[in-house]
Image (cartoon, rainbow, N blue to C red; front, side, top):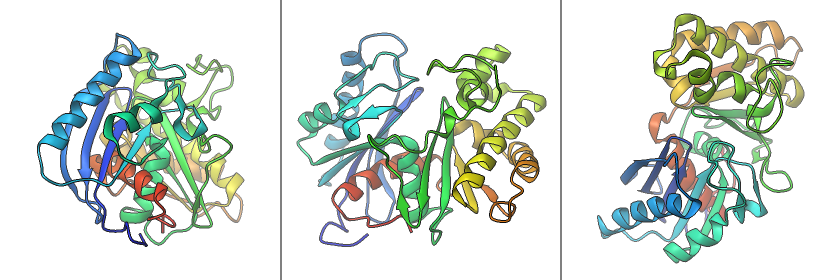
Length: 298
């Protein structure tokens, strides 16, 4: 980080299909305080936002530390860099005006980005991709998301949706995805998909399911590396980290078969270096980047 805001504490909001996480993050990436809640399964968009508002109130009233920026990581897709969000795994939000609502709630300069892109910044700044200028960061959790850094710059795209690796087709004519297509990685390998396919939560997955999930993630990662000349993929999220070594072994085996070009055959895949704090630190990095305090991930 550089500039006058480099020492700022950020109010960080991570919005996922399973949990909502709000906290304060210091400039060195340490989490000062956090509070969590489950993402409401039913109810309106306003009711869901009300849970976030309660978490924000609890965090801010629990300490005398005053944040100077708010960063938000959320599932996508989105438009207008967060002016409107429609997360595939949060049906209650369709064209929800998230940026405006958070700004009104906090009174802080607020910046919104995809949660996996947020993780990509955090892993480049504090985690497993420090010093690396070209890499893919992924979240394999309730859904599957990704963020791509090329030449030291996070890719955004027209509306901030670049990196949606969860919607790469890994099984032609496979399961119907929430996006409307068939065979997407998210429809085959996310926590939601695993629970639907097996009838039990991902944490109870069999060895066969763990191996298949890793294989499909490796297939998608290899495709991205072949396309974009990458040498590193950093994977986090409750499913990937929970499945652990067998998941990564299956992913590496598939990468060996699929990434055969000179520029991709030495691709490495590793677990995220920030553990369960990664999404919240990533949200903070979105805020700092919005202020111009993070000039690049590396």
